[in-house]
Length: 221
Image (cartoon, rainbow, N blue to C red; front, side, top):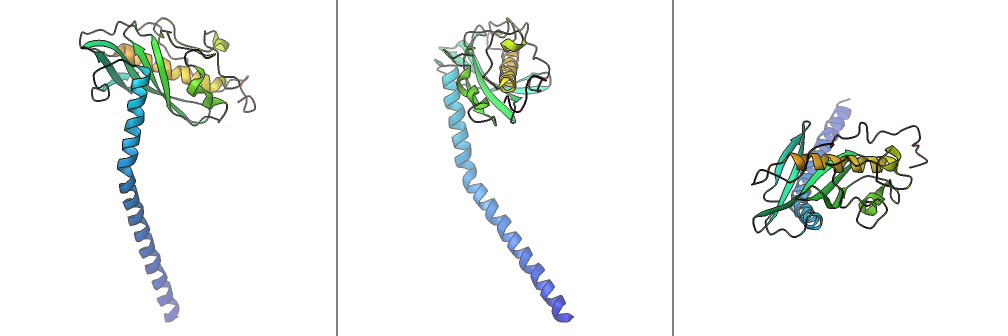
């Protein structure tokens, strides 16, 4: 009996030791990779800002502002050239078919969409993942030049002017919901001269934009 108790005690001590060592190793590895990951993410964001609102000579990321809309905080990166406001890049998220979808949208000084970058998503490869390019200039769902302040962007299936990604209506609705939210944050910000040059009307987000409708099925996705 004593031998059994001794063996159990030794096993517990060994397991405790192994667990402690494993935790320490994981913490060490996390610390080693933390900075490289942060640097990679920073470069990705910097490149995206330069792509969606080009031509600035300031540092939009260093001048980042947080804008609250309906209780949600949005990151706004103001762009200026020669001290003159030329637009901004805004981060926004929405729930797509497979999970959270994060987009960076660039607006000019009048509130028109210049370009966008899909920063992250969990959409189906070959279907919802097409959002990375589908809505760019020259493509079927092109949203460049549109101003969400004049009319919220919605897919044609919902009476809007934007063609949804084939077999990915849910993803398309989520993407446009994020773009509309980005515009709402953009229109609510204050620049050095007190104006963005954009109107803030008609920027309501469609209700349950990412929720499946009867016509949307897993097979259609």
